[in-house]
Image 1: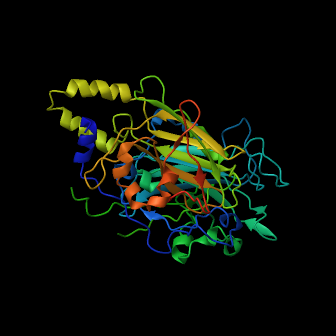
Image 2: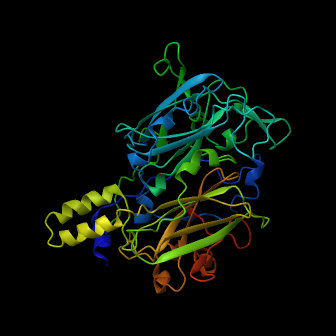
Image 3: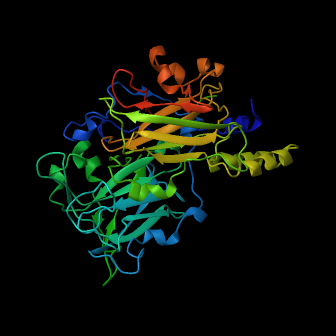
Length: 243
Length: 204
């Protein structure tokens, strides 16, 4: 055995916990039409976590553009729309912070249009808004983005289908097993009950945790409303693998 | 346990905006040892149509079977303090410092993707055996509400026969995880999301 592989084996590594039933979406959710031809039809094969799943990529602070957490300052002019601050923490299921993990976000502009050639929605692009950002969490798992509240936009899933306002979040966490891509929604959005993507998770409490909270503490006087969105990643198994 | 993991949502069709900055299609390069390999493939849906709007991420050990992961490198350092071979290991670690083990590419209009990397070494399985060389894969695309997880294995690897994860799979489907030799030096490995020759995906 290569020596360094052996040393890695000496770490009594533990796997990560699996989701409780209903708290994560099934792959097939027919109201979301795109899932019908893309969801696997055969049962997934349960994989006990190995070294390959309990390790995962990390990103150096030198790879991070410190300006990328402010989506309102990426051009000479300011983007149109309602300036907001989105802050939160990345934690595991035991409440432990996830430090120095990469968060990437992307979103539509205030008019509900993405800066992407596939988006043909008849709403204006904003020359001062890219709609993308990234950051590393700090030592306590905190993150903070300044952006513009995204607009709702139509899509072709069904007649008169509109996506509620949302921001896409991509998070790595400490391991391959904790990789998560999700979407953050806004409180009081009238479109939420009708959105097949938001409603793909059976457990009502689980899906409602995708709705950010309006937060006075994050709100900055005469600057921007604040929203709080904590991201919880799978926790560690309590028992290490034997051997 | 007081909290519950955040529910997954689809990456949607517009991820390019957010994920392009950390696209990595070449994990090899100066300072990375091992056999350089190139993997190409295509992603297909249940109708056999190419998936032009997916993003593939890979995670792998280096040629020595070492993951670029801090939890374990700290431990390695503490072991090395009392180790006569410490100097040699430190040298190897410096050489491997350029290897991050992470790749990410979008699929092209024809559903294709490709990576250039270093063939990974073997790493331990929970049962104490060594796993066959493999690359862990995440697939995200519009229509997938959660990522799909699978692995790439290598052709002509006798260790595939005893691999911890391959043995979990019924024999008739194992081939979906094993790349094929393609044109000069290339490996071909396709992903079928759904259907008769569906790729094996893991509950991970």
